[in-house]
Image (tube, rainbow over all chains, first blue to last red; front, side):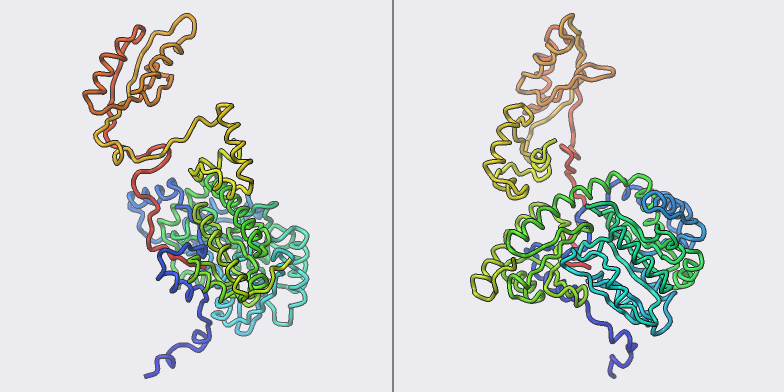
Amino acid sequence: MNPQEYIAEHVQGLPRSGIRDFFAIVSEMPQAISLGIGEPDFVTPWKIRESSIFALERGKTSYTDNRGLLSLRQEISTYVEKHFGPTYDPRSEVLVTVGVSEAIDIALRALLNPGDKVLYHEPCYVSYAPSISLAFGQAIPVATNPDDSFALDPDAFEQAWEPGCKVLMLNFPTNPTGGTADREKLEKLAKFAVEKDLIVISDEIYAELTYEGEHLSIAALPGMQERTIFLHGFSKAFAMTGFRVGFACGPDWLIDAMMKIHQYCMMCAPILSQEAAIEALRHGSEDVARMREQYAKRRDFVVRRFNEMGLHCHLPRGSFYAFPAVSASTGLDEVEFCHRLLREAEVAVVPGTAFGPHGEGHVRASFSTSYEKLVKATDRMERFVDQVRADGESIPAAG
Amino acid sequence: MSDLLAMIQETRDPNPASLAKVLGRSVDEIEGELQTLKDNGSLLGWVPLVHPSKTDGDQVRAVIEVKISPEREGGFDRLAHRISKFEEVEACHLMSGAYDLLVIVRGKNLHTVASFVSERLATIEGVLSTATHFLLRPYKEHGHLLGKDGDNSEKPAVSA
């Protein structure tokens, strides 16, 4: 019996996650300091946890409406209108999902026929390309530029477009680069999306963690709400990763199509998580502001330290990741850099290529960790980088 | 609040070298600002944050509600200052409500605290009454939970 014969070909063809490989190594090194964590280091604010406990005590253990609790959808509608602009009908234009990951999956499955093409920027969150493949679509990655702080580049999308493109996926602020999208470029991209009749899936999970300027959703631009699926969730801004709750907002016909899949594969998001999400939207804004302030200070520290040690690092304008260039100044490719840094300095960062080939030469370092660990980790990295250079394995630091 | 004070409170590390590194400033600059903060009374000193029941041995603490007579000149101030000067007194606050001063007292044992209250505190002229409540078990000190919170050893060390 050959087990592989039984696995669907398109699943066999999925690449193994670079992060998973790295996780296996780091797991064996409990003394290592990890800057490889893709989630907040803050525990979910107590008032949010407590609301979930209270719901459990009241016996709220049932399924909910497939679309999610109406009270949550109403809160989502209010929150999105207040913070992002567009107005969505909670009864027909909002769908509560199990995290944004599920929303991406069902949005793509609802939209793509085999061979339909999806434009998305890269480096990007690890699930985008696999999710497109699993929906039998064709991924068309569009590079963002390190010299432009990995910001949105509408011209690159226009150049990458080809017949058969149906969907445009965005994630600003971006995991792993912290890149953002300013109004002018977003407007240009919106015009392009209308011209080419593209549906936009906009994953704005890091929107609240924007440090420079104000976040702008493409769904808020004229003519875009009708062709945009706005995705958001509670994991990052509210530090609720383990609750697994997110949502999609969009035109009723798109939400209906997503619902068809959601109702069969997921049924509904866990009710206790939905109860916690209601509390987060009603009373969590101060907690979000407090965490954002902390992340901003830590960002300034790690970016300064990376540049001091000669690892060129742009200032990420959002998210909680720094994305320094390591190869230009050490001569090591990003994978070797990460493996040696872990073995020799006991610091874990993630190779940029785990987020697509355009992450080459970079690593992702999360600054969602304590100052104490950030200071130690960057000190260790500095010694490691100095040693690599001293060993003559490197070329001089890039100016 | 200055960046320096905010950082000290967050990192709880008063080491000028560490603070200089985190804030991206020189050690001399940090030491100078610390001295200024001390001189102008903004920075009163360093208080190690310890777990009371793990470090105090048999020591006990009590919260005492004290009613006092206000005075024609100075109101409650003179008596409040006088009470605050006792070594046994950890904290003393003027309160709104049913009593005037909330006094937190620390002693070797219950008897010591009781003696302090009955022999030293209650006998001060102007102290009208006292009500003593002994602290039994701490759950949170200076904003720190004393039980485990957010402990998640199974959180992945690397994730997407």
